[in-house]
Image 1 (tube, one colour):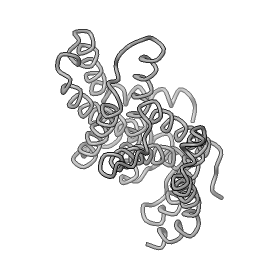
Image 2 (tube, rainbow over the protein chains, first blue to last red):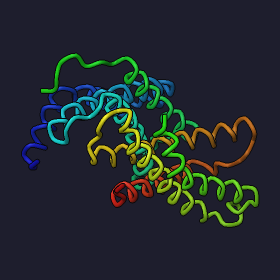
Image 3 (cartoon, chains in turn orange, cyan):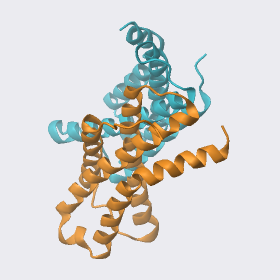
Length: 140
Length: 130
C-alpha cells in the first residue's frame, strides 16, 4: 500500500462525507464571529451534539473506504471504531479550546461543567449516529 | 464468550492494579499531599487500559472475524480515550452526588485527559500481541 493509494482513499471519503463536519465547523465559526455562544449559551449544547453526529458520519465513511487499504473490517468494529474515534476527537477539541484560551487569551471554555457537557453531547451525538446510521452501497 | 474470560485472565490485572492504587491513594489522601502524583497515575492508567483493550480486541476476533492489525492498534487507543471521558464523567458525578471532591477544576481535567491519552498512544504504538 503506497502513499498515493492512501491519498486516493482519503479524497474519496472527503468528497463523500466531509460536508457534514465542515458544516458544523462553519456554524461554530459563525457563532464565534457573531458572539452567539455568549448571547445564547445553550446553543453550545446542540452544536456539540451535531458535531458528534457529523464527525462520526465522517469517520464511518473513512473507515469503510479504508478497507481497500487495510483489508476487510467487520461491521461491528467499524461502528465501534467510528464511535470511539469521535470520543478521542471530542477530547482533542477540548484541548484546542483550552490551548486557545491559555495561549491566545480567548474565552472559549466556560468552566468544568461546560467542558463535561461538551464531551457528553459529543458522545451522545456519536451514539445516535452509530445506532441509527446504515450505509447501503458498497465501498467505492 | 470464552474470549471475554481469556481477556480477563490475561489482561484485567493491569487496570485493576491501577484502580487499586488509585483508591488506596485516595483513601490515604496522597493526591492531596502530592498533587503531582496525579499525572503519572493517569499516564500509567492510559497504558493499562489500552493494554486491556488491545488484548480484548485481539481475542474478540473469534467473535467478529479477522481485524487488521493497524485497526486493532487504533481501536485500542480510541477505546482507551473514550474510557477516559467516562472516567471524567464518573469523577464529576461522584463529586456532584457524593461530594467526593475528586476533581480539582478544569485544568486538572484537561491534564488528566492529556496524560491518559499520551499513555494510551505509547501503548498503541509500541505494543504488539504475539
